[in-house]
Image 1: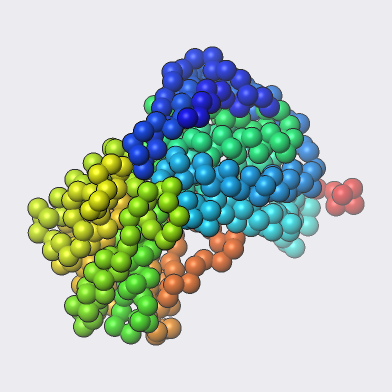
Image 2 (image 1 turned 45 degrees about the vertical axis):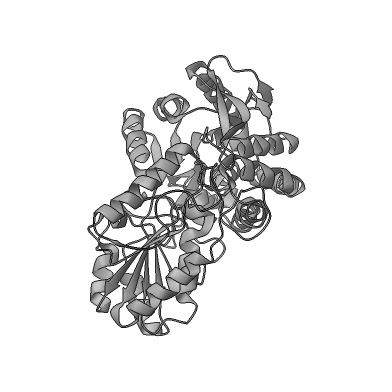
Length: 481
């Protein structure tokens, strides 16, 4: 049982000024594994004040010095890799092997990519040959509030905190109160790296409390949020009165378009990707659109893959999926599965209830629906669990229409051996990202969406620029540079 009733403010662990205790639940056992304190407005104000006081000096530090701190954070992160993996597995139910190989390493991946992007980053740039005495200065936006989710904790914390540090911003992090343990480890890493007091601050809390405090605070210049579209809309409204920048990375309902000429591993790859992290990924390909000539055989293959997908406790090594994060999430997913049945989709794998032999813990049966129409609830709303909907199509044009007929626009996927067809699809699909034939995005590619998936672009150069303002300067004396 972990007891961490402190916040990291102004370079030190301090007792909360206000707030209440909150239990963190191990989703594999349904038992409390930690106790934290939720911050109140006084705690939020103290953290913002510390960040504001540190901003002037941190923003003026030579960029190479900031890079040095980030490199040290990276080294200590690697030293604490097992602690980080254990924390993530415990708090949100990622199987321990997956926590080590994917969840924890998402942090090092992003830190490395930001270090690479920063090496050639120019904070002062010429406007162009037509205006030799004009410069564009990229300057840190100020104090930023970082609100991160529970499903990929270090993926999102490093996508926000690292570029903010490099840009010269100071910050207050509010991790998810459901899964705060990995962020506590991250704060310890920041402390061990010697980052100056006040630059990085962390306050545990919920969205209605600390989240609202940060979103409405006059001294917070920017909110970077990852989470649900509902919460993103609320943050945007709360932030409007103070005219702060709001960067939102929200949900998704990705279409995985499988043409008849797809490779023989496309279906297996698609089902496994949907079920990865127990379906708790905003970029999961949860709608499988299948060309009708291969529809029946695709369903059979998908059923086979679902049948081979093991479900077990997060504490057990091996290649399996774990529980979903909470009782509320479990009940929500059960409701969606029942809704799919009630609306007439054909249940071909899984269903309501826990998998056989698992009577405790928030475990969900890997579930597949066939004969889904795109107007069904399970095709419209983000389920955030291991639930796949299979939808037939007859032409390339129909596939595009179905894929784009969604409020979301984060990631879509295309499976075909026809390069020209893939290229056409990639340009027609309305999403921030398109991945084809199982090829992941390259290092430094931006992560983000359109429509109800938000408009953030996290990662690489784009991720750095989200924390910077462009200042136009005329009459620059190049001889004095």
